[in-house]
Amino acid sequence: MSTLLFSDPVFRRHDTSRGHPECPERVDAVLDALSKPNFGALQRRIPSPATVDRLASVHERRHVEAVLQAIPAQGHAFLDGDTCVSPDSGNAALCGAGAVCEAVDEVAQGRADTAFCAVRPPGHHATADVAMGFCLFNNAAVAAAHALNAHGMNRVAILDFDVHHGNGTQDIVWSRPGILYVSSHQSPLYPGTGRASERGGSDNIVNMPLPPNSGSTEMRDAYGAVGLPALEAFQPDLIILSAGFDAHRLDPLAGLNWTEDDYAWLTKRVLDIADRLCGGRVVSTLEGGYHLGALGNSVAGHVRALMGASNSEDSC
Amino acid sequence: MFEFVSLRVDQYMSAPPVSVDPHTPLAEVEQLIEIHGFNGCPVVDADGRLLGMVTGFDLIKVCEIGPEALVPHYGAIMQRPVHGVMSPVPQTVDPELPLTRVLQRMIDHRITGLAVVDSDRLVGMITRRDVLRALRESSPAESSDPQEGSPS
Ligand SMILES: [Zn+2]
Image (cartoon, rainbow over all chains, first blue to last red; front, side):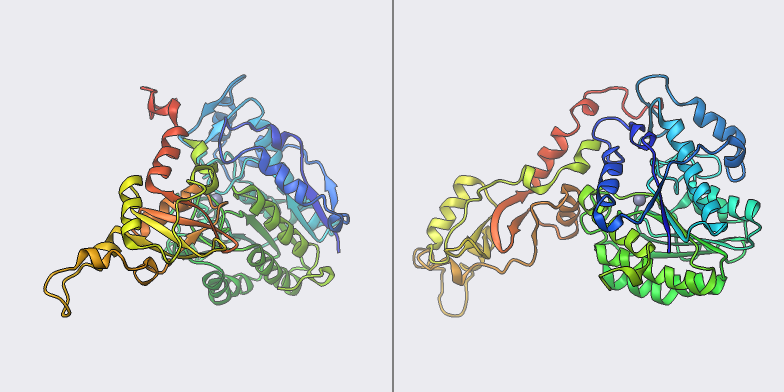
């Protein structure tokens, strides 16, 4: 079983201004965790940037152009109160979307089983025409559209376990029956969307709001009863994970209490389904996660599960 | 303002905390609370393990007029050891917990302060005042910036 790791120095150069929680050190924490000897089998790749055409498959073209034009030649610019860009941000965002698309190519063509993309900025708050919540382009949605358009797939599932609701992904997926969007997230919390009653144009959206202060039990119950059965029923050809690690008990931006084991548990359940339904094809892309230690440890458990639970020494 | 989210309890807690042992008379506890302006005082054993908290509320409550006396015998009551009066501590926090989470707990449970515990040992106290100081110190630029909130 082979697993790819996409990373690029440009993800570090996306400078979000001093003290910003979505900081370059997040990538360091992830790559440090994945540099341990038990990740030696990871095949490391450097992505190419996505083209504007490719982004325009889910974003409005003038929005893509406006975002790229808003990138300052020096210093910082704020696209909203939270979302900061600097000279390398456009390149980082294009390479992030490019990484997830390339991961889809590799997995779709059988050259790898699974992939993890250690990208910044994250993507799931980016709607078809708004960059917000630290996100410029919706990496997961761009990659899902790419899988449908370029690889002749009929059904792609995006499962989003970031603590925030992926309002951008929901916006893009709403009227695309070929994509299923399953999300667990704290509610109430930013950005305020993601009620269970929001179900998409063809029942292709499954929201699992979780109450503040809830933890492993509530999370495993929700996935066991709702999220995983929905994923299975959709019979996807490929599963894309919007992998945010900010539901961790130490994360400063939210109030859920997940542990490293919960991420490994969920990833293994998803891999089980992928093995049964779609040849084990899973592509994961980094979203949030703002406690550096918790992020590193959680990504380690997640990627170990992507590399094949059967080879792993731990079982949860 | 962004800096606040990266701050942790151990950067803003008072440490080492003022604490008393379980045999301390209430009179002494009352004095400590008076001098330090505390809302409460942690009670620890000889090894520094947190046994409970005693608050102004506990001191008032022990003076409640009950069936055994017509008036509260304040002088005698204040000679009692604190261990019979202190309250159990329903929740403590880790030194590495983000202050954003402490802030949320203070709101959720309407509490003024939390004991900071590291492997059973009391290592500090974190209060509303500490959290407000962290908020203030982590956003000096914004508070003095008249342009705040205007679109860029
Ligand atoms: Zn998030």
